[in-house]
Image 1 (cartoon, rainbow, N blue to C red):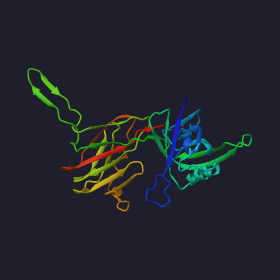
Image 2: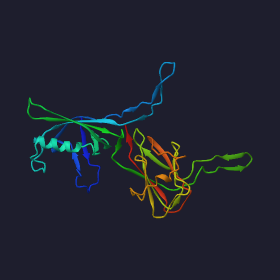
Image 3: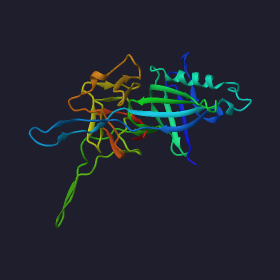
Image 4: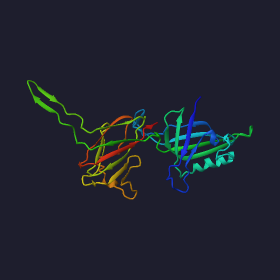
Length: 303
């Protein structure tokens, strides 16, 4: 029998007075899932008509947000005696759910199908519909609709890999003059770190650089994309720099009011992403010494 587990978690700070915690859509909490549509992202069309000819020039490459739908029946009689929720009515359950649908909230929906991998997505409320079945005067159904702005599901598991500074360019080959010349060609640079995105869509990592190092540079060798800081920028010992490639923020010591966005050399830089499958990363600053490194944190991304 098919089973879907769905919950909402408040993504705001836990110490907020209005923090809502987690809501599990389970029969024990009075909710019976009738239908769940995790959605597929809108395709962002990039087309124009071919002049004086049939067809279109289609350069579509990106997707946008997606619609997420959940239908639940309110069944307060299923809440077990002895539970802290015992005594809640269907009306109480509806009020509880509607409190999660404020447009200003960005709850995290976690879900899994038939006990498979736990996935998550950040949501923004779109609509709530309700219907009372007067024929049985029992089950009250809510139709809940959200938009997922990022358009993807992520693995709930957070992965982390540490990249140590390496050299620039490639390792030089060697030529031995024997009876015949034997040439050993250039090889991949020492210090590459393999990072695997197990999903089906590009994932945006969060990268924390730890000093001391100058002219921070990191590259996804697999895609050729680089993120480089200007030559004059130095990250001293004890400092760290947090680069969020999804939110596109660059914060010294992770402090919101301490941006170093202006230190990126955008003439050669792009925001890094991890394509599905194997990604080879290398960190090659202008100079560095121990304990300089980069911590790459990411979640596998799925359409």
